[in-house]
Length: 381
Image (cartoon, rainbow, N blue to C red; front, top):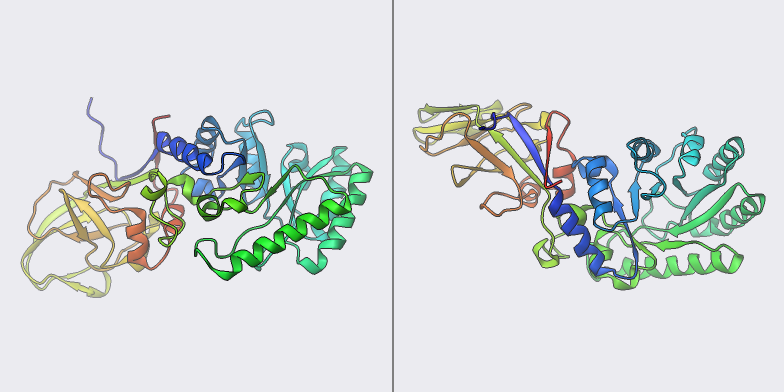
């Protein structure tokens, strides 16, 4: 039976994801593996990707928000299947629900520890705490000057039985820029924070700071656990670190659409909003029914690449909310023929990195912003 053409689809190759997990695990063979599946697995679908990563040997799942962590538990990923961690809390968050779901909870300051211990007492459970030290990223995390107070408070909470500190962790600012001086400074600050906590009496199960570039290029950062994010989905964290092929990784998402219209037009026709593209000669235009309402970056207007009929074409004019137009230069594919916006590149199609360059952004944003109007179709489950 022939498949009915769809407007647009994001094909998610779970075999590629599993292979990527295995390749990344081989880079850090002595460390446990946390598959970071925040932001709906960087746009790929949180639950299917989490399950595929566990099949390939991940034992931890990383989320940003508690709602994401709780959704994994609600999807049937139990305590025996994986440890689940979340770290982006705001006051009044669902601390008790997370404690009762046996989620490891990132704590970056005293306010969070106070809310967490209160929730643990209400639940009658010991909360699992992962203390974050800000070693120089300047985002979440406890400042080094405040670290002794937080460590001391955790020791008291452990003695009370309300918490168990299961981890100490941090995050690099510039690990995607090999040789950047902040890498050594952050590594030293992290080692000092771990040393202080352990000398004070904490016994963390895992110490972790390695993100995707750390996992790929900084073996000294692997400690007890690595936390690959974008690399797990087959996208390099930066061109300076290397290409996916350099590390044996394969892009997991392929974004395709069915041409909605092909038409002949005269020279001098303004195309899309603002007429920033005017046909230089009589030609054919193809309407690709994907736009910024689906997550395609408007900043890639006139530069975003699309494979149609075996040739890569550039967006003609502005990317609109629902479609983008490509100049087919006289070729006449049929309505319903496939347009490939990005994929692994095997067929000469653009990659997410190509779209990132066209839009002046990073590959992370290209895949993560693909919206809910685009159905995810899972293959090789």
